Figure 1 (cartoon, helix red, strand yellow):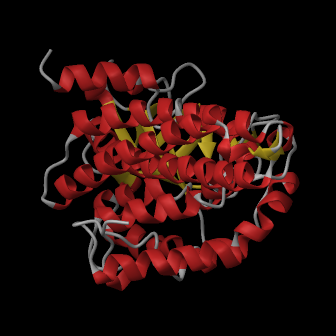
Figure 2 (cartoon, rainbow, N blue to C red):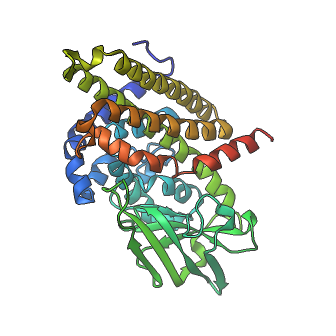
Amino acid sequence: MVASPFETEERIAFRDTLRSFVAQEITPFCDEWDEAGAVPWELHQKAGSLGVWGFGIDEKYGGLGFDDCFMRAAYSEELALCGAGGVAAAINGRMISIDPIARLANDEIRDQVLADIVAGRKGSSLGVTEPGGGSDVANLKTTARKDGNHWVLNGSKTFITGGMTSDYFVVAARTGGPGLTGISLFFVEADMDGFSRSPLPRKMGWWASDQATLFFDDMRVPATNMMGGENEGFLAIMENFNLERVGLIAGMLGMMKCCLEDSIAWAKERETFGKPLIKHQAIRHKIAEISARIDAVEAWLNMICWQVNQGTMPVAEICKAKFFTSKACEYCASEAMQILGGAGYLRGNRVERVYREVKVMAIGGGSEEIMRDLAVRQMGL
């Protein structure tokens, strides 16, 4: 294999550590956790000890004190190699709420919660999506009304990953007029009066992860819990989504690699019509197509990570790569299922889990349709 020009000794060592961690601490238990519908909380703490949530976080909060997009991507990819997106979702609900807390919360809040979140001792989630709309953030309905030295929140959020187990939330609410200029962010604790939550039942995939609907019923939040400026939350939300989408692309790349590895292994083992499946041209062509899509996504992801590390956020490229990768991942999952046949259709293997969970990747973090539209707008059209 040709070495990537983007690799460094530090990145290789980080990836090796992650791969060993996933192989020992996650992969053997994926099916058990999937069927149980949860992961043990100690897994959060074990992952936290590796520093996987410390990118861009000051060392005084237990962070790494530096950021590297390649390492961020490596974490998402290696975690996905367990073939259970629900496990990844279960421990990573905090990922898209850590950065807003680190950048926008006041010192008191950061000192109180950030170290515990980064270490995996406590959970946190981002509350943006609502029952009436997902990607249309500018039209959110949850409101926050100023009342003395408090804000009073009313409304609800849904599809909140980690919502049932998180202790802290970053919640978007309307503090001003309609549209994107009237939104603010608030730091919310799960034990506040007026806060309640309920689990989302009967999901198609991500069984090991909890997703929830959150309810705010005249919930009073101290004015100091506003994160960032009043009515300035929309831009912070959009900026936060960019790195989330990079992580989703990397996670899908890992899922695609699962499909390739297991397709090849099965095709070598399985015999039909007097020869191994791998010797049939139709199967060889499927494997070639899966491999080609992996190569395309990996090359694109490397360039995106390089641009981010150079201080540029290539929003159009991230959006295009996100919808391109979700389509590629669906293709790989479908073809791998065809290659494994009935063996792939039985629960308890990576291909079955990837096939079941791939669709959420085309929806979460910005749907394929929204990504296409945003990419074109970023192109100035």
